[in-house]
Image (cartoon, rainbow, N blue to C red; front, side, top):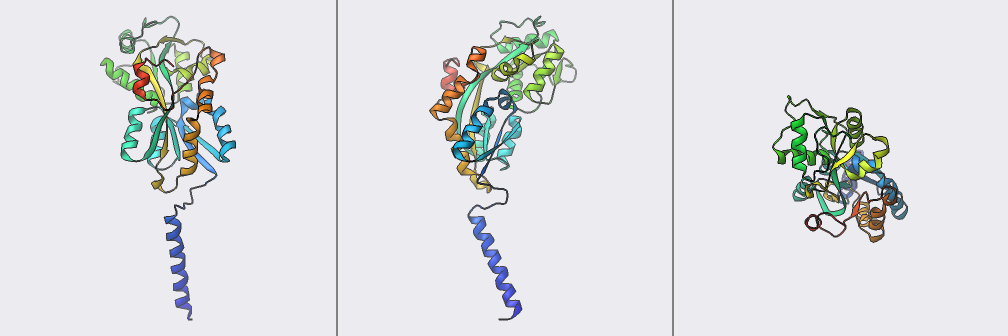
Length: 294
């Protein structure tokens, strides 16, 4: 056999191997021993994942890489195929990914609620108000400082939707009482604590950080509009480098009865109330209909 045909045969062999590898879903960015979890900074700040993830890693023999970002960024990671599984809290934005086919298997894991926290002297007189639209309108009218995450997170998305309900547009430049922090929940609460400002936060993060933000009190709570739902979603394996096996295992793990019980008991004794309420196999509508009580 001449040298040229031999080289041609070798090249064809390499090409065929590459085609087979592609068809089998092989990808240099994929590792069956690692799961990339894109989640929210607020959930990560609560410490819940520090309790749950090591249990999953031991059971599944998989290393979990947690990437804690705003929900908007986490959802983009899913859409771009840069994560295996998502754990986020922006239902409307999540449904967009489901409809686009970027994610599959969206399932509720837990919920808590958002609250408005603020300084003890409560300059906008919103303390005890259960109607969040009324409370936000009072804050805007009073000119009291409001600290926003301003980071396209699930909390930020919720905050903007609540402002929309009031007819107030705080992003107008003249509204200098409105501070966009551009960081996660922990940083935003720290700024609010330092500036005697109001802020919207999920209850779990607020409780877990309460010792570090002593000058912020829960002032507005109880409105059904403040319910905060956390869902797990599997990134579509068609994106080519997704650990579909481990992501399904992780989703199944989160909704398992014993893990749901752990979620419900997480720091309950410390704060006298749950940071998260288990929600596996439930619907947002059913939870909202009963006012969010567990």
